[in-house]
Length: 617
Image 1 (spheres, rainbow, N blue to C red):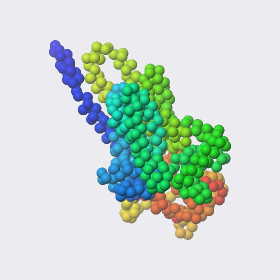
Image 2: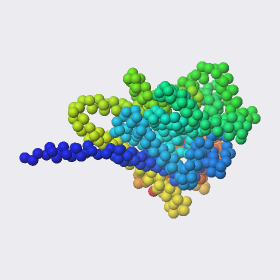
Image 3: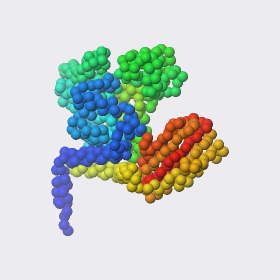
Image 4: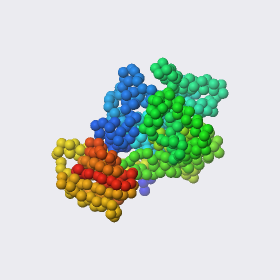
């Protein structure tokens, strides 16, 4: 009988000599590529094929803000600055990518998403510094790579798009400064927070937890020097920006001129009888009546006075708005705007929106009991900072995408604890002899689990991305008159969507459809199905006029539980394809529904439908 044991020992011995830094680099690059790919699919899905990102964004996602940043970028390229609405940090970021060749908004979106994907490297460093096994650290960087919250957030030309990356790099620099304890590193950390503040002014208060961190982790004889270096680095860029504003506009301004306005808006985040609201349009109107220019120093003084007055006149209500924010911020992280209602990577989404907060609370309590102060500090900082800053004044979901980083850290520490418990059950002599091969097996298993989990959603995302490419091709074919509609206003089978006698529809002499009703708010009027069983995408040309009342025009999913496209009709105006073209991927819907319904005003409504042409591919 042949004895295979010497050969087996030799194989294991050779495997144990594998150089892990190389394998880890390959693994991290693979996760980064996955992150870039996922973000590119979200880019395709969300206006990536449009000729004008700004026009698309104006309809779909805060497009009124992006031009200000792009104008700032143009100013910086011309060595000037023309606005005092926002600080120059994010425009400087865009300028950097423009100089590298990203010379249009769509290219800037891709560059920004790649930058965000490489955040995986400092994230991995943080996890390893808080003693997380590298296999689990890889798994958690994978979470950052695929999570729709971060993938979607990274592709928009908005300053808050880079907030998660700024926070991750800051945390990594905090740990690196602690380990190296070099004065120049503490200065660099302060400089980074200063730059981050010029990108997102709500990050200005980070200097407080960073100062506490510096005092806690530095040795006594270098504490004052380190803290001084941190503060000098932090104040340097802000002082330059404030000094520039003093010369240019005549007043000191260290961040933006909308900080007090945000505080006042926070009072309007709950229904109230005090006249507080959240609406830029209403704010402009209110200020204009008082002879004040929106986003001016006078406006800031007005908002500050009104906010302080709120504390004097109804403090309990102000506290109620604060509690509203504090209770919502830990869970309000579902701002991925995924089309078709598809819940990609649902387990990850649940971590960010449901159980991540409770897991974090448990982990921090355990860390404090075990006196692992620095790990607890790093783990909780993203959430605690947000609660102590935006939580007190005003927040939107898009502002706080960095908060769930705390939940990722908490998950990593929990899995690490479970892994250590399992290792202790294995014979220690075996572990010490084959430590590297066991670690390799654990890491491989974790990556296989991650790969098995994401594969279905990756396929679904790929199919949806391809559908949008087909949609672009279909749109060009329709514009060039190279394809015929398979359904039109005349061929669609319109049916009453309500049993109410106060609804009628007729076709007039020029094949227009006239809808007359007297219905409740948002009540359905007419509906027609579209057979999409053999299609991957549809494109709809339409022309609808609202003659009286209110109304809207929509496309519903097969189960009629999701609105896939929507147009609100304005009385006396036509709404046409040019105003908001409808390109709808089919996904798993065997049929879709076209729907006309009453608008937000109940009562009489009259719509004239002049054109509905449905094209498919």
